[in-house]
Image (cartoon, rainbow, N blue to C red; front, side):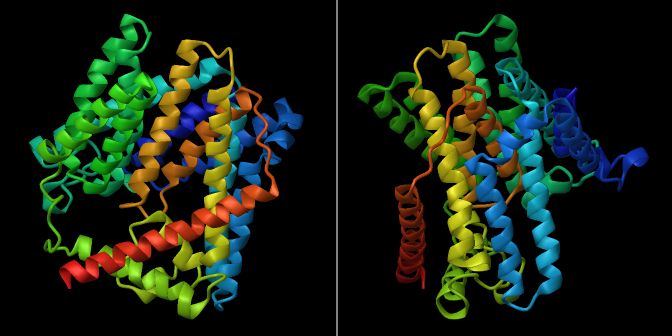
Length: 414
């Protein structure tokens, strides 16, 4: 029953009939499903609920919620502290609910297939939107004649994230040891997903796709020749298939220049305003006319060094746990292939969130999928003092990279 709840939640999360279909339009069906899922899990096995709450990932998410609240309170935005605190608490609840509901490898495998079917439906709507001017939800084209979906996906860049995350499953079903039915599904997925992705014309999405392809080839071959082949393929795709907007700096919407200016503003927020807690969650737009279009920059500008530390810690402990899973002996080949698909999907999403979506909910859902792998394989993520040092070092490195990018852009284009 909890597993069915996850499938139902993912349907409302991606297809989102609550945003366009009359009978359920405007009703928070997804939130109701999550609450029901949590209740079912508590009734079924409350001890497992406690175990999931003790995960380092859950703890870091809860600490980030606290940092979000403090960031607004410290800047005298009490109402916003409640608003954004509850939003990120919702993300935490969704994370816990998904990890609780996935209690077997078979279910994790079914979710991969289910996600591919969802991507096919959305890809079909992209094709329909270009052919007729609207999709099944009545959405017209995005600016620049690019495609979009509804709700969370009401934008070409955010829509591209779905196709980036699903691509590893297409590659795995096609080229790893899966049956003919999986390969046929993957072929259908390849057609609709590649077509849909192309119609988004997303530069950040394209970089995410490049990261996915390279990581898949690396895991598949794990040799110098394989890595070289992956690099050459990515270089070829970059020059032969990159979006038409990839080389444009001064486009009509000033998207590239605007993002660099936003990054510069974020650095100023932690340098001159409030280094520890930033300008407050949700306040970035009041200091810069556009959002950062970079997950880390957005977090550090709004929640300061404290919030960004917990946000990066969430990523760090998840990746550390996944790495332990892949070092584990005796994991069968097909099982490892599915695990790898989720991990590569995470690599793609992390790449995308460095360029387009400031802080997308899909990222937290996908982290739940990866964390469920860690729980299924009974890997204990040991968190020590040196790990805090590594997270802090990672934070400093990100800030220096952002600063370097701003300096280079200013010297070249200003």
